[in-house]
Length: 477
Ligand SMILES: *[C@@H]1O[C@H](CO)[C@@H](O)[C@H](O)[C@H]1NC(C)=O
Ligand SMILES: *[C@@H]1O[C@H](CO)[C@@H](O)[C@H](O)[C@H]1NC(C)=O
Ligand SMILES: *[C@@H]1O[C@H](CO)[C@@H](O)[C@H](O)[C@H]1NC(C)=O
Ligand SMILES: *[C@@H]1O[C@H](CO)[C@@H](O)[C@H](O)[C@H]1NC(C)=O
Image 1 (cartoon, protein in one colour):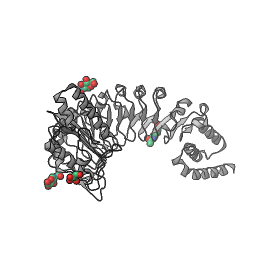
Image 2 (image 1 turned 45 degrees about the horizontal axis):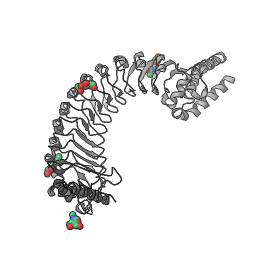
Image 3 (image 1 turned 120 degrees about the horizontal axis):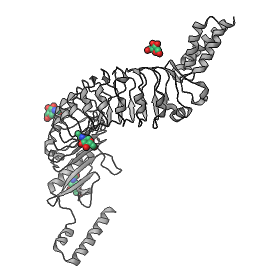
Image 4 (image 1 turned 180 degrees about the vertical axis):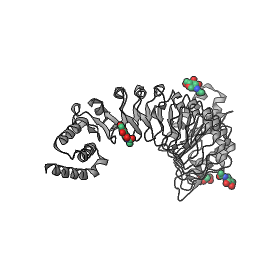
């Protein structure tokens, strides 16, 4: 169908040309096929055939790959009147994209496509057991003059190390090596890729430390090294990444202090360091990250006081996740001044004291996690607030926290938190009846604490209940 369409269009062109008797025009129409060097065309066919399998006969299926028989995933451009391939993406992105064969290979002809600006492989190298594929470590220099984008994404069968030679692709602006099976250390040579705007090496099995050379990538906007097994410290050279908008080092084994230089990243909107081994407290310079919208530090033994930062400086914060980082101190009022905050995670720390009542007034707050601390006093949120947050409010495992029973209908009561009055009343009743109050009030408050609390409480409930009945029997006697 499509081919027919093209043929008839070129007939129309021919007719039009005859009418004008334009010689150049005649020449064009006669040709039918966009001019392309034979070598370039053959290199394209061989390169693709290497990935999709020998059944694929380019010259038969796509006689004019940059003209009237375009190949899905291939783009071309004119240079000095000839067509060259400028983009090649392999893998099932669209219905009729080039799928990969079982026994894929990098054909050497791939590296003859010297005008390539963009090369990407998506879900192409897939069977890790049958066919291990590595990234070739030669010939890349041939593409260095033009290649701006290189991407290997979701290729579970792509293993081995990142060849250092990729560091010779000095025109690269985007290098994405995401969710493959690659191992080994990150090449220092990537520090030469000074035009990179985006460097994503996430979701592989990379180990070792982050090369300090990456601190020289001064044009970088996005740096994502998350979900690997990187160790060692946060490179001090990262203070040079002043253009950076997003820094994601989460889910690695990085350790040591958050260095002062982190505060130089003034344009940073995302800082994600979750699930590492960072320690040494909340670096004061974090408060200089005025552009920050998302700060996620959870699951690190960071320690120190939550009050060591002027939180009110970070007015753009939307997500603040400080769960499980060993923080002490009281939740400062300044956090309740972050008017854009939608997510506040403070659970599993050693936070104490009363909650700032202003928290309830945060206009966008949509999730508040406070469980597993030592917070005290009354929860002074409105029923409306609990209704809005639902399960996104958690405050259990704060033994000295309670909610005022009188203002709360049972279905909005915060799960795992005991009511204030009820407990006092029971204690009073017990007090008036018995001398065993010392032993029984403990049991009683434990009972109240676990009442309504879904998972933790349920197992201990029968035992506590039994003890309570026992106490009551004693009391009656
Ligand atoms: C493709 O087909 C043509 C003609 O149908 C044939 O001459 C050529 O050898 C084939 N090429 C490959 C690589 O199979
Ligand atoms: C690069 O290729 C050579 C052989 O061509 C091999 O000996 C070497 O181990 C390779 N290096 C990497 C990092 O793959
Ligand atoms: C930071 O962002 C501002 C505003 O977008 C921009 O003008 C400035 O050049 C950026 N700074 C760096 C170092 O890129
Ligand atoms: C919790 O706070 C109370 C005072 O409010 C204090 O007596 C107690 O030691 C704290 N518990 C822990 C585990 O820090």
